[in-house]
Length: 192
Image (tube, rainbow, N blue to C red):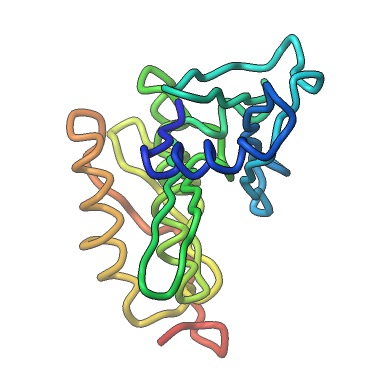
């Protein structure tokens, strides 16, 4: 579920030495499954452990996760690094804003997950996004662009060399291509 690197474990162990004996760490997500999701780590005193918590045991510490946060922390990684500028604790949780979808989920759910977790964050750099309209019976994903992508002169390139290529690589035996449903209108909102 969560990977805590050795350097992060060592960091937490040092911090826990100054806490009440038996205190561990808690990893959580505030506003899970929303664009406002934020991950965090806090101390977890022995009397704050809930019966429904999930305990992840590591060499010298345990991490507790509440049952609501757990699916949103799938494939998360906590790392601690030190460089010339100082130290930094990082939490990478690719599923915090959208619930992880298993490989046996329906195709539409798996594609929506890829769009929300991988494609839209890339498009957001230019103020754009894309939504799944439908999947046709002959295996074409129909998308609608919005924001900076609507009317952008590079949208065809983004569609064919970016999104379509990525989706066909991820779902080779299930998809035949990607089509744009958007009525593009160039304006101030367009990226190019």
